Structure formats: structure tokens, C-alpha cells
Image (cartoon, helix red, strand yellow):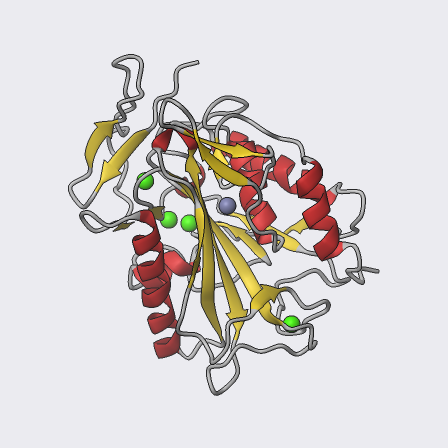
Length: 318
Ligand SMILES: [Ca+2]
Ligand SMILES: [Ca+2]
Ligand SMILES: [Ca+2]
Ligand SMILES: [Ca+2]
Ligand SMILES: [Zn+2]
């Protein structure tokens, strides 16, 4: 199978085909598509870029008086891109480094489900259409299938439901980074799918999930339920515009959405990363929560279920 990732580098938008490409077919950006506003600086790695994104987002949130901050982000990479996904910790929030998780029935999360259910929202603006082309109906259905897969996990009763998006451009990170040019400052759901056009990540990054936690008046992370974990406000998922996205083929929307939604539901990466003889990377044991995408994987594997159950089996959902 031929895979043809394209990377748009820096502010100039130069399109470079990876060496792994087996033919000349590229996916030039469709004419008339406005350029996404927030990109990597020249020579910036995905890790550096995402770290900077969180710093700048938090500075803007502080200036706006918001009671939440970005504390970490996880990104997944294409296995053929010679770099592995990772977790990036934002250093400046509060005086301690806590893990982060949702608080059941947290009244600050007015966007959450009334009965303790977890909510999500999907950007239905042009952001729902990848630059490589796919109808919004198909990307949306793929994301909905991914959310339903997590909802169907046997050990939990999350009652995951979709909230209205009101036709607005979902994206708190995008809004804060762009000075309000794209995105919106509003929170629609516990897990926000912000679409394909707000942020263009560096290198082999396919998607990233940002975790926001609540802070108190002193700027410290809160832990109102005393579980030793900072209280998550919401999470926000961005899909990278540089790739050819597909339904059930590479790069598969549902598989990446399932992985990112795993982060949305507090799961970390799983598995070891190895270098194959041809220099490309491989993750093992195989799991949705591997930090690499290599081919479609639309069902939860043993480690995925295990991680999910350890986090959610005791969620007090009526
Ligand atoms: Ca958006
Ligand atoms: Ca947008
Ligand atoms: Ca990119
Ligand atoms: Ca807590
Ligand atoms: Zn990830």
C-alpha cells in the first residue's frame, strides 16, 4: 500500500514529499482554501512547537482571566516519519506537577453531562473537511464511531453523548494562539474535536490532544476531590492538515480519532517504540494508545481496555 504523507513546513508552506513515497502523486492544497493561521516556526520540532503553543495559550488565558490552563499535550506521529509521538508537559502551572483527571459531577464543567456523563463536540465549520478532501459528514461520522467505541467499553458506564457545536469554530488553543482570528474561546464539551484546519503541527504529527485543568485564584491546579490528580476542565483535539486523510484507509480518521479520544478520556500512551531495519518506527505491543500510527486500528486492544478500566470502572455515573 502506498502512503503519501505531505508536510507543509514553516510559514512558506513548502510542500515536501517524504522519501518513503513510492510514486509522484501528491496532494496539493485545494485552490481557494484559506491557509491555517497557526503553524510551526522554521526548524521548530513538534515537541518545541506544542510546548510553545501551550506557553502562548496560557499567557493569553491568564490575560483573559480564565480559570483554566493547558498543562499537557500528547501527539501521535505517522510511523513512517522516523519520529515517535510523545507527551509534552507544560511547566508553568502551579507549584506541583500532578497527573490530571476529570472530577465526577464537577459543577465547574457546565458543558458536561447532567447525569455524570461525558460529553464531546465536533467542529462543523470548514474545519471538518481535511485539506486533502473528505466530506464533513464522513469525518464527523468517523469521530462519532470512535466515541461510540469508547462508550461501549465493557467496564465503564460513561454515557458519552454529543453536545451541540452551534456551527462555531471549536478551538480554544486556536483562538488564544491566533489572537482571536480563528477558533472560539467557548467550551462546548468535555472532549472537543477542533477539526483539521486550525493548527498545523511540525514533522510527522498526525494529531494532538491538549489537556486543560482548573486553577484557583493563586494560579495553582485544583484537586477538589482529593484524588491526587489535577481536575480536568476539558480536552481539545486537533487533526493535522498536512496529510491525506481517509475513511478506513491511511490515514484513517476513525483510528486517529479513537486514539485522541483515548487521551480525551485521560489515557496515556502505551507500548514500546522500536526502530525497524528500514529506519521506520514500530510500536509494540499493538494498541490504539501507541504513540505511532501505522495502519487502521478501529477496535480497542487489551491494553486499551485495561487502561480505560483502571481510570473509569468506578466512575459514579447514574
Ligand atoms: Ca476549529
Ligand atoms: Ca477554524
Ligand atoms: Ca503538519
Ligand atoms: Ca482531582
Ligand atoms: Zn497520543
